[in-house]
Image 1 (spheres, helix red, strand yellow):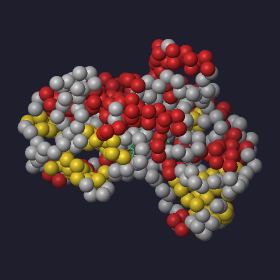
Image 2 (cartoon, helix red, strand yellow):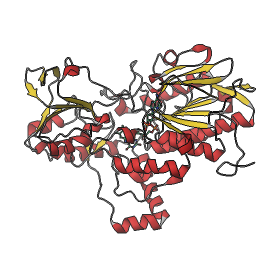
Image 3 (spheres, protein in one colour):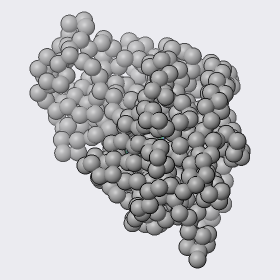
Image 4 (tube, protein in one colour):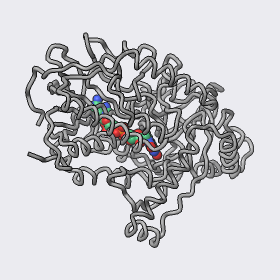
Length: 499
Ligand SMILES: Cc1cc2nc3c(=O)[nH]c(=O)nc-3n(C[C@H](O)[C@H](O)[C@H](O)COP(=O)(O)OP(=O)(O)OC[C@H]3O[C@@H](n4cnc5c(N)ncnc54)[C@H](O)[C@@H]3O)c2cc1C
């Protein structure tokens, strides 16, 4: 009997995938392709798309050229512009559900509360938000890195009587027209949303902690001729994708001093449109380019020339009623506060309760910050794979996810082919890998710049970034490493099916 997408035999493992973002959807496609049919994709959201469903603030857009931001096996060639906006990306990801045949496998509106490895039955027990238990042989976590909102700790903020929301939970039911608005934060989400908010608000105050490098982007919408060429000639789009890939590869290791200097020059030229020298000085970064996530926008800096837009760099002391009070004693009364303060990026799987062999909690395994072999597996947690896990953030994440899913599929086939109940990463392999990785991270000069970025965990280790090229990641995830895992033969004791 054959019923995998490529005519492969059906596979027996039950797989729970947490998250229906780009990673979860890619996993679903590849599971079906490899002949695994007994799987569910759970997402706490009511729809698929992950980041691109949750982040609907005005101006939200890709900052990797879009021709590189679609799956290689389902490439979107006709993006309307070089850096597509959120609605177009979400539409693409939603269209993948039907295209990949994932509808029957999706369980939306289902949060995963915990996952426990059962040593006796050698299965994972996954508990959902409403207390249901799912039993699986394998768990793939596609929870993403940008899901736990970071809320600023400001006295009085919770009692603000006006409208308060985080940029990643945009209130479409709230009209900012004619309002006095405060945006707290000046990083990625603020850079994209501030120009749009300024169009509606009567008064806009932007509270900045540290200035960012914001580079210009070449984002002229594609012409009809270009779109026709991309649609009718797959090679034209592939060639453009390849050029983007090469450009990114030359950049993302932040190791080329000329490229770094050129980026800073481009950032300063972009900033030079700000007319008020005092405002321009406050917006000038004092850390090296690359120290934090590089940002791009052609419309952010010009916003500061508008008479109703104010940049505030004094720290906020408290929120008192409708008034934001800064440490210099100045008061600004606002109708709405938007916290563009990003995400708790360093929690990974420890955002939910996870226990592995011997009931060990993942927080304890990660006392020194999250770590995983190739960002994928952590010792003591058998048959548990992570997508976009520790130290895999760099380049086009869709590409990185595809490498991760390919790796996981190889391990799943191995379980079946060799009749294994589980595999577990050897602790010494994880230690060796992470020691080497930390050494490599130390070599990336700009990441040592002491920025308030999201790269470092509470103990100071860089836990989010991949220090090499995407090609290097692909090579390493392709390399066979059967000896890296302790294996256990036999069948599992629990036999329910997921579907
Ligand atoms: C504003 C913004 C812009 C970005 N721009 C780019 C870009 O230009 N290029 C790029 O490469 N990357 C970008 N990224 C990174 C982006 O997150 C990844 O590209 C990609 O979305 C990661 O996919 P994912 O499936 O791993 O995670 P996500 O897209 O984050 O999806 C994770 C899913 O898991 C679900 N989930 C989480 N916890 C649970 C739980 N306990 N139970 C059930 N479901 C759960 C969430 O609801 C979500 O749907 C951006 C991120 C943000 C926030």
